[in-house]
Image (cartoon, rainbow, N blue to C red; front, side, top):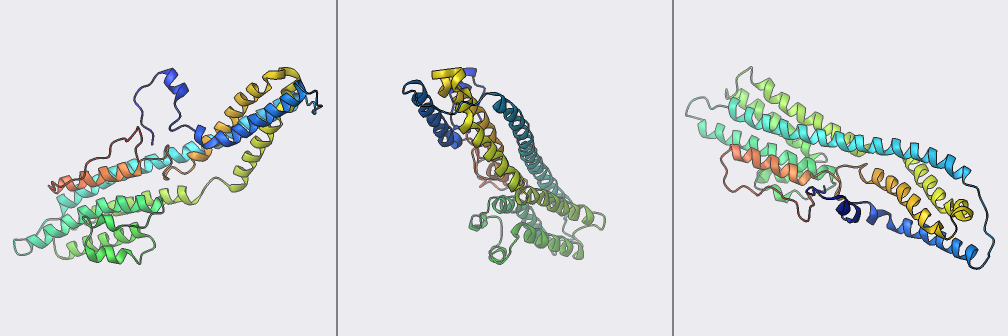
Length: 312
């Protein structure tokens, strides 16, 4: 995610990093090139080109604006819902870590060390879950970096799991039940701990729904085609009206339509690694630091800061 301090209007006009210019410049350059060739052939060499009035472009442009507005609103709804889900993940993780440290208590001194070890394991598993969910949403499989949070046995067991975050929640549920069997958790507190795991499952289900259900392919293709045909045909509707200024006018209109199209496509999947996607690495690192801080760990990793105004 691009994170910039307050900037001026001129800086907004000239910045490139984090904008859709890098994604759309090939099609924009090609469209301007076509407009320039058509203009030169007509204005300087007298070559006949089809003379289309601006009326059809006006009508089609209105329809494209409605389609692009609907698609961008839908894409932003997906982006914002993803951010709310990860905001809920931060809160639920903190709640579950606190409840674990509060409700899991050793019964006597005989098994105190074992109970405290299990409690610490559960809190570190909360942090590991955030990292595993991030990796699942970004199609990453290398979980070796979680050795400081999970035991070697659980890391090895994750290799055979298709849905690793859900597997970890299952194991955490078993641990809470074992703690209840051992008398370390009160009868009234076990449902609260299990409810925290259920809330994590609901959050993951919401994230997976966004990732696995893109905007319908036929709708996306239709938008791309209409915008492309419209921008490439625009010079033929403007040539007799704008003359030598046709390439400039086409550039302005094409930038608007290509830009809106590219923005909707970029934020459609909020969990990726594009510059404007959600900073999942930053959020999962924050969850880890918050959880391990409650355990009194001192070898905490630093919170991620923007690098060249970019949070990952």
